[in-house]
Image (cartoon, rainbow, N blue to C red):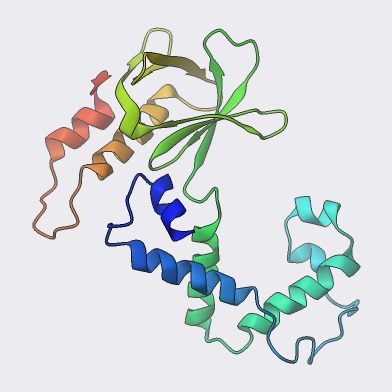
Length: 215
């Protein structure tokens, strides 16, 4: 699992973050184990528990309160003995382990398409998502990107990838400048070294995020 997560970020098993990925996965799996004495302080059918205030509307519609209550109590028992700081750290670990962590979404209209779709913008990839059903249609990685630019007259983003793959889209719910800045910012971060002596290249940053042409 750690190897797959690194690969999704364009990194190998030799990367220095490999051990931290393993520890993150182990911590996440440990949280799914039910602690001894689960429901010791409250019965599983505790009707006083307001499940709708503890879960998202999507899950509140999908499951009944009597189905959610045992799962909520299980989760509570796993963090009940933690300090506030440890509980927050545990929450952040779970959040960062989610498949969609770090993605920002914009509704776009791809060139040649007659319907709106969703573009997911991540630190290392772009994702084309079917707006109607939420399925991932296509994924493009930045390390395969040759160039991108914005036609500021028609507000259209055009991207060229290796293998003669070209895509273009207009943004529906955001200014195309935001998408341009996201892509440029993430590519700039990928060029940064972890070394403390690595100084900020402001000229490159502004070129990647603010210019009319990039790469």
